[in-house]
Amino acid sequence: MRQSNLIHPTYAENFHCIGSSCEDTCCQGWNVPIDQATYEKYQNVPASPLRTLLDESVLRMPKDATGAVKDESAKTYVFAQIRMDSSNQCPMLTGDRLCRIQAEQGEALLSHACAVYPRIVHSVGGNEEKALTLSCPEAARLVLLNPDLLAEAAQPGIGVAGNETAHGADSRPIDYWAIRKSVLALVRNRNYPLWQRMFLLGVFCRRLDAIVNGKLERTIPEFLIDFEATVAGGAMRATMEALPLDRAAQLDIVLRMAGLMLHRSNVRPRFVECVNAFTAGIGNGPGATLESLTAHYSLAHDRYFEPYFRRHPHILENYLINTIIRLQFPFGKEGMQPGAQPRMVREYAMLTAQFALTKGLLIGVAGFHREAFSAANVVHTVQAAAKHFEHHPEFLNMAYGLLIESEMDGARGLAILLRNTKPAVPRPTTPAIHAPEPHVSEPRVGTAV
Image 1 (tube, rainbow, N blue to C red):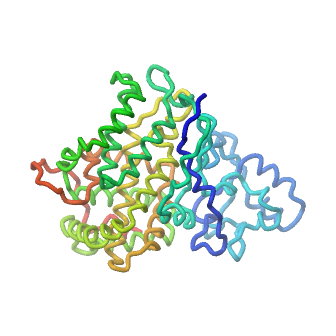
Image 2: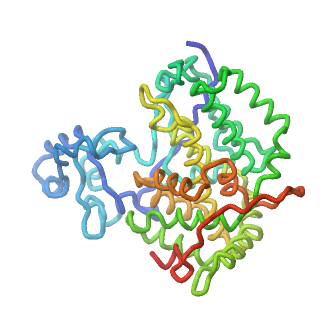
Image 3: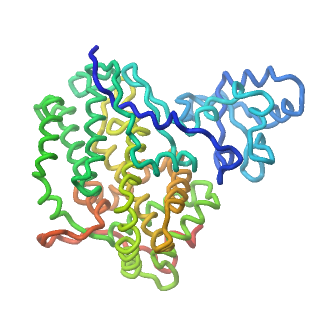
C-alpha cells in the first residue's frame, strides 16, 4: 500500500431529501425493491393499519426469480417488491408525499434501496466513493448547478498500487484510481471545447484497451504520462478540427435513442413535458423532414443552447463527472466484477450515447424556451430523461446496439454525435455518414407519447 491523492468526490454526501417540497417523487413510476433483511423487519411490525398495509403490499418474489431480478443501487438480488397502486405509486406514500413507514417506524425500517437513493455507492480497493442518480430533482440540482463540483474531491487517502477487481489480459492489476484521476482531469480541461475532451477520452480508452488486452506493449503509468503530455501539447488539435460535422446524422440518432424506451418504460408526465418541449424546439410536426428538423435543431443550438452553456460550462462537465463516477467509467460495472476484463471502448461508446442523448434533448428544449432557457429547464430535462432512461436495465445495451446498427460506434461516428460547432479552420471534404431517414409522417418523438 502507498499514500496517494485519490479522486474521492464528496458532493453526494451533501445531499438531503427535501421531501414533500420536491417537484417529483421517487415513490412513483418504478418498482420498489425490498431486501431480505428489511422484509424480515416488516414481519415484526406490531398489528396496526401499517402492518396490514405492509402485508397487502409487500410481495415475495418467487424463489426461481430471486436470482433473476437485480437491484442496481443495492447491488443485491431482489427478495421482495412493493405492489404499486393504480396510479403506479407506492401505497406507503402519504397525502403530503412522505413515507408512512419512516414516519411511523423510523428510518431503520426503510429498505436498502429507499434509504440509499439517490446515492450510488462503490467500494474500490478499500476506498468508498459515491455519486448521485440524477433522476432525483434535488440531486440533479446539486450536481449540475455546482460551479466546482470536485472542489473538495482530491483528498489524501490510502491507495493501492493496483485494483484487485480489474485486470488486464495477463491478469496484472490495473491502477483504477490513477486512471480515474486522468479521466476526470481530462473532462475538466477547459483548454479544449467539451466535445474535443470527449473525443480525446475516446482515444484514451482505445489505447488503454489495447494495453489491457496485450495488443500494445506499454505500461499503464507510462501511457498516462505520455497521454497527459500529448493533451498538454495540443498535438491532436488539427486532427480534431478536421473531424466531421453532421448535425442531421446526429439528430437522427438522438431521435432514435429517445424513442427506444417509449414503449418499454413507464412514461411519466414530467418526461412527456420534456419530450414535447424538445419536439417543439426542433420544429417537429406535420410535414417535417429530416432537413427541416436539422435546420431548427442547428438554430436552437447556435442561438440558444451554445450561448447558455458557454456562460455555464460547469453544467455539462458536472453531468459527465457524475456519470463517470456512477458507472465506474472506463471499467464499467461488469468490468469491475472479480475476474472480469474491462471493455473500455464499449464503455466509452455508451457514455457518448448517454451524453449525446442528453445534449440533444437540451438543444431542443433550449430551442423551445429560447431566451428564457434557464437552469430550471436544464434540471427538469436532465432529471426527467434520467428517470426515464437510466433506470431501465436494457437502455444502454439497446443504445449501443443502435450505434452498431447505424455504423456510428467507431471513432468517426461517435465524433459526429459529439460535435455541434463548425470547424474553426477549413477541413477536407469527408464522405457523408449513412443515417436512416425518420418517418416524417409519424415523428419518432412527441406524437408517440
